[in-house]
Image (cartoon, rainbow, N blue to C red; front, side, top):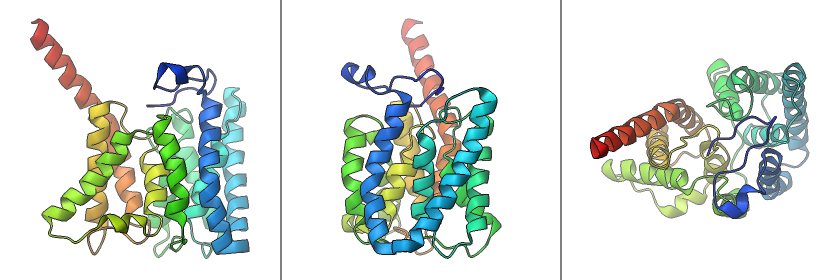
Length: 278
């Protein structure tokens, strides 16, 4: 599912009973509610150190999205707050605030707004921002594993999948790709490893983002498989990364290839129909 213009709020693809409910703003609010449990456990673990990052992230996103919304004469969406919170939960408190502001500004402008805003871009602004920090400031660290973060992410993940706001095919593809490459390489990755660190949080809120992943059902499986395989490849020791450093480039490359994967799926389906009606 891809989101479209926030001017005319789209209906979410899914069951007919949901199409009259899920507008653009409601989808963004649903993401915000799903972020509350992870935000709560992060605040308990990191305390006051998290507040400056949240404040700088909110200001950076709101300023840039507000400017583009004013120029395009569009309302400012709730997705701006979700973007800021996800970014603040991933970065480390030791990152200088000016670097955090610069990175997120780059992510919002270059990764999202120049394409037309949320739903028009094929990249997630948080992924672009984190990749920018990694490439521009070597040695950039991310937040250490917050206890219970995976468990706090689980309720929101279940809700988003059941409401069809994220695709279970994309999520399944990531896990299958990760475990398949791990098995072929003779690794010892276990299901319990998925609960370590921020893996589940990043996969749900970044890799499975419907605006930056494949839109076709076969494409979602392929896109997820590619992302999962790249996660294993980018992990120095193989297996599951202990921090986001291997997840971010894998998700970024997966998003870049998502439009090509969808195009290949559409072309293949068109070819089959022509052969059938030939």
